[in-house]
Each structure stands twice: as C-alpha cells, then as structure tokens.
Image 1 (cartoon, rainbow, N blue to C red):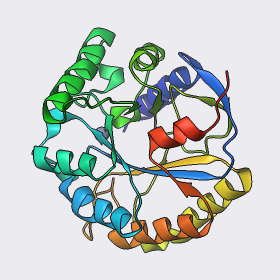
Image 2: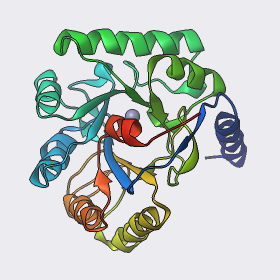
Image 3: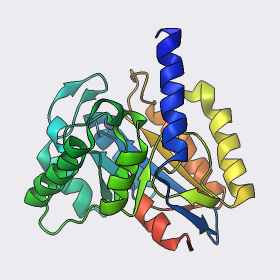
Length: 251
Ligand SMILES: [Zn+2]
C-alpha cells in the first residue's frame, strides 16, 4: 500500500472514530468476553463452532448472505443449512450487510439497502429472526454509516483493538482479531488478563479456523487455547447481544 493510501485510511478511521457516536457508560458486573466470526467460512463452522460447543458456549456469526457458498480468500463460505444449524443451537446471527459492503466505497443509500436486503434474506431462512448486532465489513465505518447502523442495531463492532469499558461508542465497539498460530498465545493471554483487571467487555473476532489458515484466520489450537484461558480467567462468555444486554449501560 502506498504511503498516501495508508495516510488516507488513517484519516478515515479517525473520522469514523470521532463521528456518528452513540456513547453510553457500561459497568459489567464481571469481565465479559464475546467470540465472533465474520463472513463465516466453512472452517469457522466446522472448527470454530465445534470448539465453542465443546465448552458449551455460543458465538456471534456475522453473515453477509450474498457471500453464502462462495469461494473467498478465507475459504468457502457456509451454506444456508449451516446458518439454520448455527441459529438452532443458540448462537447469535449478526448482520454484515448482504453484499459485504465497504463503507468507504459505498454511498449511504446502498449501504442501508444492503442491510435491509440481508435482513429479508435471513428471515426467509429463519422466519422471525431479529438481527440485533452488526459488524462493519472490512472494519470500515463512516459517521454516516454509523448513524444508519444505530437505526437498525443495538450495537456495531469495528476492528479497532481495545477493551470496551466505561464510556463506549455503541456504534463502533472495539474488536480484537484472533489471527495466527500458537506462537502468539502469550499476547492473547495478556489481553484476557487485562480484560479481567479492567472488568471490561472484550470482543474477539476471526475468520477461518484451520491449520492452513489465511492471514485473516487462526489455527484451531490457538482458538481453543484462548477459549479455555478466557474461561479460566473467570470472564463470562456471552454472545455480543447477550453481553450488550447485560452490560448495564446508561446514557
Ligand atoms: Zn467480512
């Protein structure tokens, strides 16, 4: 990436961070951790979901229905029957726009249309489903798209690292990627420890979960180690929506 593009992206992130906010104060009674999967590759379903099940936990799966069954750089995306299966087993299904739109490259009307289209497509699969939370595709948000998301969702997650604590922006929650293999486990343990000390809400996200992971994914070993360390830390493990509802937020 050229220096100018890097600079442009930094400015866009700054604008998104400071504009279109919905600030609330949260004081969770206990440290909380959510595990989320963006796009939902087949490996996130077969390995990620299986690991959460092993520990009797539920995750949040951010789906862009336009991607279902497609081959992507994180592997093939799950199919309709897998979406239904995830939902039936108590996981949260979240929105990621229908077309996996980049907010920096779309106008606000197309962006909102894509949110609505995703809801319609998901309701066809799962009648009555209410999408409560959102994750910005590619992590890109703008003040305008943040306000659109506020109309449709309780909260929306970006990719800015950090623990959600005290005063938080519901329109752009911090998220922490889980990328890589066991050589980064100590880093993740430190983040979980920090979340414990600060009594915060940590939202992890990843894409594919497989041995030959993409640069946006992790190995099953790393994910399992983080899950089990999170449990040992005493944190409550909740879906993003459950964590939102129990965070005790006040305006
Ligand atoms: Zn995505």
